[in-house]
Image (tube, rainbow, N blue to C red):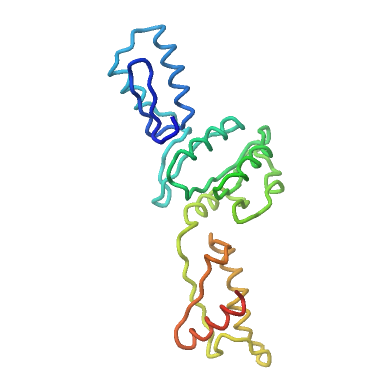
Length: 231
């Protein structure tokens, strides 16, 4: 099966796994085969039992900041590849992955696998002596993969990625332009400094096409001038 939710057939039973990874199809088949050697399987009860079985920590659905979060303990390359295969089958493409790993795992290989996905990757850490302390060094910050030391901040960043942040700075009466004689550099402040500072303060996209400027009256002049100058 390649469509979510995953459907498969075992003997005369049609089974649908609604909240499971694609890897659970083969796991369910194996479990049913073993069970059938030990007991007689009741058709209806077996289907209900399999479809309602959950495994905490493996494609477990939760909510964070009113957004869906999937917890999956993919702790090695086969596990990560199975998770990515599952995500490919889900229609939702706007996916962010928060990733961390212990130092005895295939960390570099797993980061390499994640780097070739279309998803936003947030590499992070947590308070455990077994965590790989070199994670930060392995990550080359790009638009698609960043390192965030706090796992709480990483989760928040992933959850808020596409929310809108509106910043309304004051330009006094300087028309939002640089005035070197008065040591007022409102143009540079609006066009460069404010953009960089807010991107550090909030989980904002660094893409040019996601960054806008606008205003009315004097603010309209400043928006037009600085938008052209710093675009």
